[in-house]
Amino acid sequence: MTSRKLVIAIDGPAASGKSTTARLVAARLGYLHVDTGAMYRAFALKVLRRNIAIGDRQGIESLVAGTHVALALQGDVLRVFLDGEDVSDAIRSPEVSRAVSPVSGYPEVRRAMVREQRLLGAAGGIVMDGRDIGTVVYPDADVKFFMVAGIEARARRRQEELTGTGTAIPLEAVVQDIRERDARDAGRAESPLRRADDAIDIDTSALTIEEQVEIVLKAVSGILQERRKR
Ligand code: CDP
Figure 1: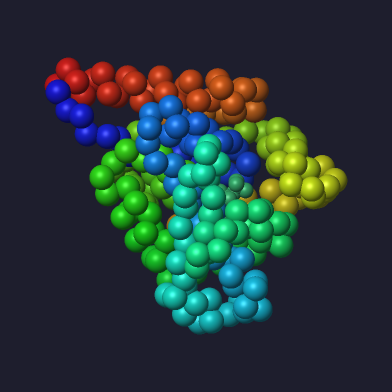
Figure 2: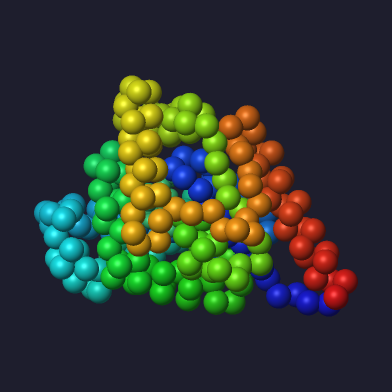
């Protein structure tokens, strides 16, 4: 019987429910949750604060070397730290959402983040969500999911999240932001958003959070049972 803990990869487009699902699955399994989008967002926030132009590849790539992004669970909330400062709320601003896709497209930025992400999962026992987890970060993950949802459902969820943090944005504006970011994430040269060939598809449009979590946990428990038989 093997007791090795799994590496679980969850990828998908903006606001498809990856992070919420990943956090709850990790809590149920006693695994570490790594929200890689939050890591890229924290770095994009630093770029904005330093007033570095989004097109300044050299300026951005040299900044990443001296940057430390960390994730820590406080209660059941994942907090994000940029060079020691808690930036969990600041990284959700519309400005960061606009900057993060181009900033995270620079090769040196990806190299630095992917290196960190691989270290975090080296011992297994991890649920990592993002855009390139099953394709680039952990192509050998034990199980991969690709989460999608209709644009309406995604925009409504994102709008509710933003309202919760005190930012009121019309639904049409949220739809446009999500569409633009999806197109940029899928169309960029470096680590574009892509479904891994061996990923399990989950369409969350009509699912509750609990249902999404159950689908993932069922697949995971199937794999664990298989392994025990070997
Ligand atoms: O939560 P939401 O769906 O809005 O996105 P996120 O997971 O916070 O990711 C924010 C952005 O970071 C994405 O739109 C990508 O541009 C970038 N990202 C990436 O390039 N690679 C990842 N593994 C995760 C996020």
